[in-house]
Length: 265
Image (cartoon, rainbow, N blue to C red):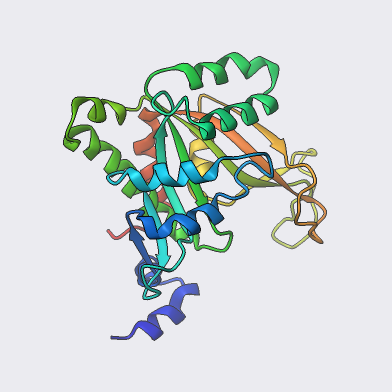
């Protein structure tokens, strides 16, 4: 085996997808991941009260849909560096974590979208997409994560043991809450600051979010107050994004991700 050589190629341009998969394992969440998931989701609501423990339990209990990423060869007890899952909002509407997420988003939602946000939390067939990663995980992991999640959702609508469970994964829309950055003074290729008519540039930390954002029904963003990372880069502001995506756009997002990261032909 030539793992070490392949790992050294991670920053190269050839066969990046192959090398990325050498470094990471995609697994179903299990009980051993509880504390690692809790750490990943600890600041989910930017310091607001959040019942992460029951959410971690729900992610682990949902055996058929959801994925964690771990460093390869680190052992099962190694903490996950990413999680992607989905919760049926109506099924979980009485849980503390859905109530807290709803309150948090409603407090930041502009007036003209409050009815639409309420509708998302009160309609049947809306999935809340949970998607957290450590900041430095390679973007090439996005496509297999997204592929895995939506394949599992499709399989669950056919393979779950009860009609109620099968129905619970038949999502028509997805509510997505994500992180990104706003660059108020983006640079051009020569490194010169440029004010494109004063328009800031959005920097997506997760590649799929840019594609979901392009195709969403509605969205709103807000700046994180008192961000703990007082970086030297004053013009780059941590932001949060909430959006509603119709399930019909998912295949297009999956294809765009594959193309961006050169999925195996």
